[in-house]
Image (cartoon, rainbow, N blue to C red; front, side):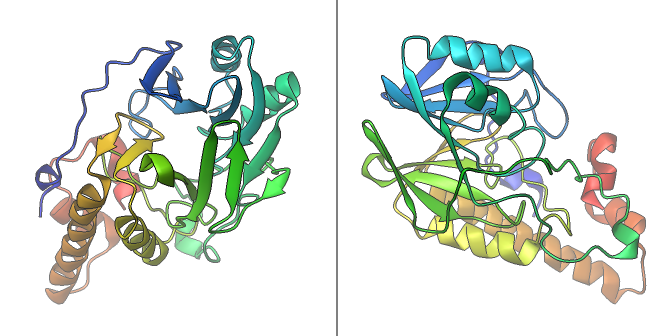
Amino acid sequence: MADDDIPFNRNFPLLPGVVEEVRPGVRRILCDNPSPFTFTGTVSYIVGRGKVAIIDPGPDNEAHAAALLDAVRGERVSHILVTHTHRDHSPNTARIKAATGATVYAEGPHRASRPRFESEKHNPESGADRDFRPDVTLGHGDVIEGDGFHLEAVATPGHTANHLAFAWPERKLSFVGDHVMGWSTSIVAPPDGSMIDYMASLERLAGREEDLYFSGHGPEIPEGPRYVRFLIRHRQAREASILHRLSKGEADIPTLVRAIYIGIDPRLMTAAG
């Protein structure tokens, strides 16, 4: 199955620093940190009105922190929620907390999914925020209640070991971080990530009622569970391709990448490996 078989949407005209209300009680702001890994940049979300939560304050970026604080001028930030501890999502937490006094909620500090093999010493996705510590640690099913919002922590390990989605069951929407993205598949790079965990987390999301996903990068995803089924089939097909190539004889990882990832952006070759 080719990437083309996934109904990607790369139409995301939001400009950095602009506040966009995408649903009642849901605003988003784009950080100006575009890259092959982040698409047009990291998207931060403001949930609620008056007394609000900020989801994923973004990278160590003073301008983005200022834009977030400007967007909530006259309001009180009561919660800061972090989906996971990659450097494009969590480092700005310290700035927002210092300015607002809000309580920080996340699954926990950064950790690997498993011990690192010798061959993984140069992991391209080692962009971990190892300084991050939440005030309150969340487990699967924990509820965060605020003024006019009710969010449920959904454990979605895979992209990182500590990845969470935040579901709003009454509104049938979910903030899915980097676990599901509309513009691209997610990178799952061990030992930071785990494909076994990632696949189980996709199944977990697909079995839930929320059908509108707001992602850490790129546009929202309608019919989320249906889209997740595309991702599951894509990953299964990728695994079959690898096994098929290996059945022809031993091959190192660069050889596998060249055979399987046809037409990939050269900047993503190492990550594909």
